[in-house]
Each structure stands twice: as structure tokens, then as C-alpha cells.
Length: 209
Ligand code: DC
Image (cartoon, rainbow, N blue to C red; front, side, top):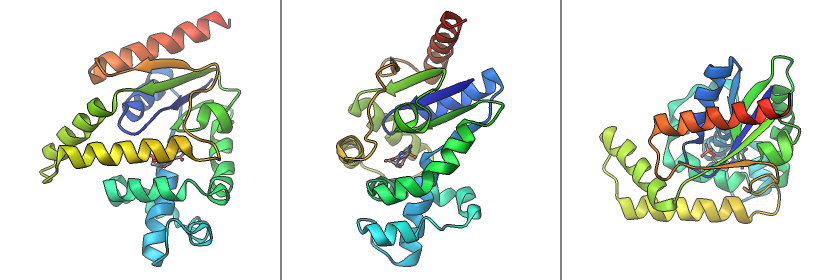
């Protein structure tokens, strides 16, 4: 079984995808980490994330970078969103994701274009959303709990900018697949969101038996 989970930043899709993978016994890929590695590598190379040639050169990152906690930083997320605009970068990262999706065991992948581009044949597709304000509050709470000195309004502005860039780009924009099930987690805590996601996937898979 292939489960595709897409949605904007801080929607809860990462938590949901990991829980789905554990529940259904499937391997999991967070595809945003690939774009984050490219964004980080551009910075390490002294390149410009908005320059297609610099971004493409950064696709040649070492796999060890994928384990580096710096990839989780907000700054790296912004760089990832910028490099992800370039079609050459998306093409360079495509095979790795398609191969992961199509492995014999099945898989769960989360990202922006899993249901539309990487695995349009997925057995279940979820599009996870929440209002920008709720997502900003979650990000704010998480950063405060890590002892960071952050400003809610700045986080909200960053989230809005990333949503706009990710959904307005020409190549593989963030959008629900026509056959995706929408899950709005604005009024849910993590446990409720996970339970709702499992129920949606189970209902979807049952209906195809
Ligand atoms: O899911 P994330 O926040 O880690 O993703 C970081 C950026 O990477 C996101 O703003 C856009 C890009 N991305 C993408 O374009 N396609 C994906 N499948 C995953 C991430």
C-alpha cells in the first residue's frame, strides 16, 4: 500500500505520516528533508538558492547531511522552499522519491506533490491543512519549548510567504490531488489528528477491496 500525505508547513503532516507508517507497518520518507538538504548545501557552497544552476549543483549533497539537525531549522526550511521552485531540482530529486514509493513493501511519503506527481497511483491520499494562524502558533510553541527566542508575528509572516511560494510555483505546486481526502487539523490535537488520519485511510482502503 502507498499512502501519500501532502500539505503546507506545520499542518501536522509529519506527525500524521510517521504514525500512519507505524500503524500500517510501512517505511516512511519525509521528502521535505531532500529539499532541505539541497537548501542547506546551497548555503554551504556559498551559492544563491534563487539561482537554478547553484540549486542544481547543490543536489549533489552527501547523504550524511540528511541526518544533520540543522535541516530542521526555519532558515533551512526557507531555503528549501526557494530551491524547490526550480524544475531542475525537482527532476534531480524525483527518482529517489519514486523508487521509495514503489518499493515492494509499499510506503508512506509526505511532501507537497506526492499525490499529484511522485505517486499519483497511491492507494490513499491525504491533504492535511490547518489555518496559517494555528500553524504559526504550533511552530511558535514548539520553538519556545526548545528555548528559542521567537516572535509569533514573524513566524506567521514566514509561514504565509512559504505557503504562497509553494502553492504558486509553476512546477508541481502544493495542491490537493483531485482524489485526495482533506483533513483540516485546526481544531485537533496531535492524537486526534492521527486518529482521524488512520480512520480516513482505513475507510479508503476498505472501499477499494
Ligand atoms: O515539508 P518541509 O517543510 O520540510 O518542506 C520544506 C520545503 O521543501 C517546502 O517549503 C517546499 C519543499 N518541498 C517540496 O517542494 N516538495 C516536497 N515534496 C517536499 C518539500
